Image 1 (cartoon, rainbow, N blue to C red):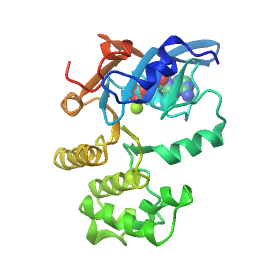
Image 2 (cartoon, helix red, strand yellow):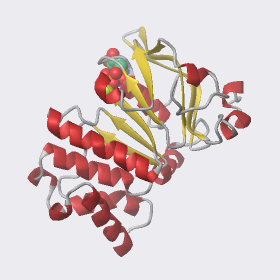
Image 3 (spheres, rainbow, N blue to C red):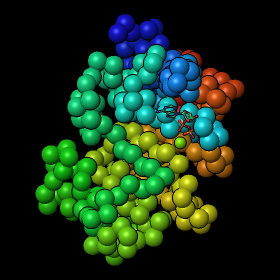
Length: 258
Ligand SMILES: Nc1ncnc2c1ncn2[C@@H]1O[C@H](COP(=O)(O)OP(=O)(O)O)[C@@H](O)[C@H]1O
Ligand SMILES: [Mg+2]
């Protein structure tokens, strides 16, 4: 796939203040066809996120947020445009190579937690390390440390059905940080939680990101939550609404206040 000027290595190597882009998605579109009709749900979206930067993607239900995350993480392929994730162009990679890249560098948190119900909290947190070939005692110790950080030191042996929603999401957060990802994608991570629990989980997401220097792409329809990110990108009908000025200017300083 020919590289467009917007994804040229020089732009990635020097995005402004010396930090590289962990996510460089340029002119992404996704069109579905069903019953002879074409529906474009992501429409020419450019999104760049620097190391350690926090970016919220905000938009109403159906605006293409989850589809955009799928494209950015290589879980789905775009109809047009291309993605560099952690310096690697996803276009030429097959599914196994994409999975390996995600396993090394990417963390996920979902609205519905997606824990494995037959594994304990500690075992769930260890899974990403095992998938990366780094299981064993050191991984179990790190899992316990992380569960302590999210306030679940007393729940290591609990199974997901024995945990509250907020506790399950905290296990999912510990799991997401297990392999020290360079970027965390969170898709409506507090959407299934009551306000108080959601606030505690939000604090943890931003605390963990700051401590670990992880970039964060946070999908939400909650404007107050989005305001906690350094940057907000608004999606309407699959398009970036109102413009995300820094996305269009690789020489600008990502992560700085507008
Ligand atoms: N596999 C698919 N086939 C057809 N349409 C889809 C598919 N996935 C998503 N869509 C449509 O794309 C639009 C955006 O979906 P989504 O990205 O899930 O939005 P959001 O996460 O913002 O709520 C919706 O109208 C949805 O119906
Ligand atoms: Mg969604």
